[in-house]
Length: 212
Image (cartoon, rainbow, N blue to C red; front, side, top):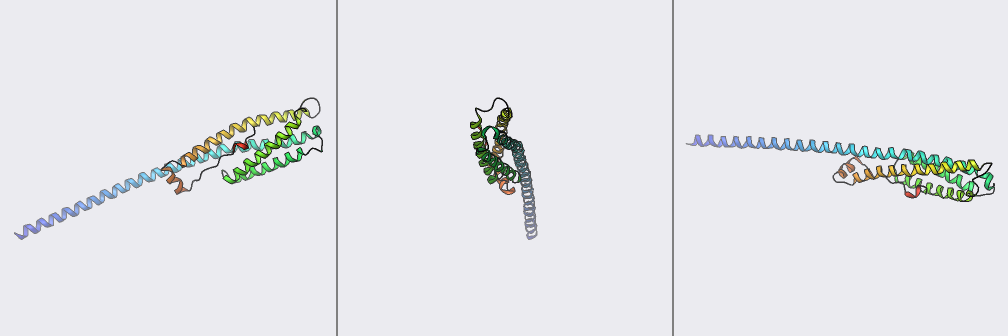
C-alpha cells in the first residue's frame, strides 16, 4: 500500500518539476523576445535621431555660406562707398569691423556645429552687421546713380538684396530641420533613447540674425 503511494508522490513531484522547468523556459523566451524588441526599438530610435540631427547640420551649411557672402559684400560696399561719402565718414570702419566680427562668429559656429553659445554669438554678430549695413545704405540712398563708383555700389546693393532672399529661405529650412529634431527628442519613449545615447537639442538661429 505504501509503495503505490510513494510512486504516486514521486510522479507528482516529477510533474511539478517538469512544469517549473517549462515555465522557466517560457519566461526566458518571453524575456528574450522582449529584450530583442527593445533592442530593435532603440536601434530604430537612434537611427532616426541621427538622421534628423544630420538634416539640421545639412540645413545649416548653406546658411553659413550665404552669411559669409554677405560679409564679403559688406566689406566691398564699405570700400566702394569711400569715394561717395568721403574718408572722414565713420561708417566704413564700423561696417568693416562688424563684417570681421560676423566672419569670426561663423568660424566658431562651423567649428562647433549646432552649439547654443556659438549660434547665439553668430546671431548677435549678424544683427550688428545688419545694423551697420542699414546705416551705410541710408547714407548712400541718394548717391547710387550716375557715373563713377555709383554703379558699383548699386550692384553691391543688388547682391545684398539677393543674399537677403537666399538667407531667409535657408534660415527657414534650417529652422524646420532643427524643430523636427528637437520635437523628436521630446516625444516619449524616444526621450529614453536620447538620454541613453546623449542626444541634445539643437538651437535655432535667432530671427534677429536674418536681415530685414
